[in-house]
Length: 212
Image 1 (cartoon, one colour):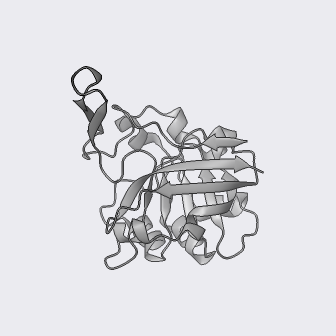
Image 2 (cartoon, rainbow, N blue to C red):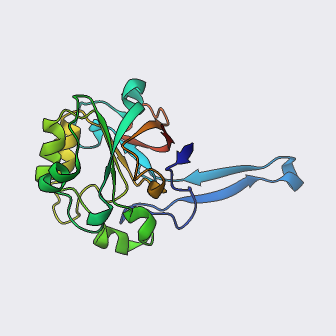
């Protein structure tokens, strides 16, 4: 069974504070032109998206350079729903994680995206990864981190969690939804497909999990 973990792209969707919101405009109509076309504006971090290392680390991989073997394959699911709204620390990850092989993909599930409204309250109430959790992920040589909460709190402008994870060359998939459908699984087949936006640091992505 396949489960779509991607937020619908529409006005009012979850949008990072102070970033332009998604908007669309009709530019061709059936009545006038015989077909329908739209123009839309969005950021590379709109809705469910993938951060490439270049988001924070100059000179590193951009989103079009991420290898498919990193973005597609088995992923270990960590059920963190009992910690919803709380910091996700090294101690929490130690408690819930099985032993991981180097190169493992991880899906971290609290349910925050589904539980919280897509406004500023999400960025105040959602779980965040702590700095020592970021160190934990890098020490275990994971190849991909996906989550349905806020990767990093907004209180530190230095963004140490992003710097640690992306600095290790590990892409981060943010703002998954519908994660209750996979939270009880140990492993899923995960497909994360960003647009190949040449030279850019991130892209909206379609993310699908298949229960195995």
